[in-house]
Length: 353
Ligand code: ATP
Ligand code: FE
Image 1 (cartoon, rainbow, N blue to C red):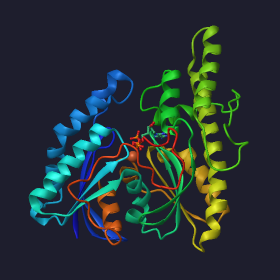
Image 2 (image 1 turned 180 degrees about the vertical axis):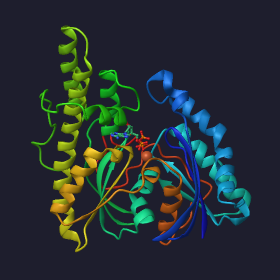
Image 3 (image 1 turned 90 degrees about the vertical axis):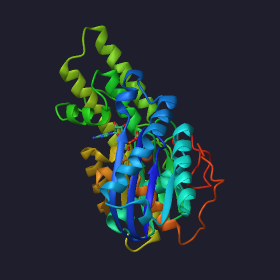
Image 4 (image 1 turned 180 degrees about the horizontal axis):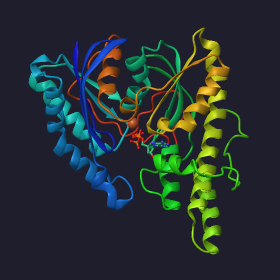
């Protein structure tokens, strides 16, 4: 089967062509058009600007994906599109584009949950077998999921406020480092002393896998203001704050991962923990998680970054996985700004967009 995937739920317009079957598929093309420059002056993604940019770029993005795969719409067997969760304007643009193609070509249409796309990616990239543990850590999300099937997700916990990527970005702003904050902080932290400032490890005293990162950001703000009272923020101050903040995030993620593994590992003889999302690029976080995984004899899997961050190949792949167990959607497919993966989970505060 050959699928066209479309993703436009946040600030990337993406299209991809995927060929194969569940557990054995090949990405023929994956085009991601970012919008960073459009939002740069506003200190965050502006929903109206994002929606308009998606509407303007989707057709071109799809055309580029087909061209890169050296295929035409005649070769496509099904269309998959992110139907939520995300910024409603962008999701609606993508869904309308997908409907147009499906209707025009008489192709089956699959509305996919964006988080299912992230969560199933390790099967596309590494052929990981169910059930596996997934830690999704990005600019917009932070949660642990046990993935037991193409649409079987059990949420073990997640952030109750900011996502870690968001915290990295905000802290970078606080200490005058460039955006995106994650890579800037990771680099600067290398020259820093993580023990100079006492920063909290939020929610470690509380049972379970829930996390919190906004208090950590406030603690950095307080330390910064304290330093600024006596003058300016030196390069060493910046490095020490970056290192201290990163170490706190690492400690929280490592301990919560340990708890998630304690719940999940007994479920299988071949445990695997997978990470996805932009924050999974952080080497300090990766190596801490890898250490925890090894304590549980679990494989540690981090898909290539281009497939860890927002893309449309993962959306096409999720549809491919789910085709076996569900019917295509009709032309009444609607965009869902909120769409928790685990329907039994309580409403996600902050962790769902
Ligand atoms: P989502 O994917 O949930 O819609 P998003 O698009 O903001 O959200 P991603 O593109 O997956 O998220 O990741 C971007 C985030 O990852 C940014 O917040 C960025 O600071 C963070 N990030 C990137 N590299 C690193 C790094 N080396 N260390 C920590 N954070 C990082
Ligand atoms: Fe995402």
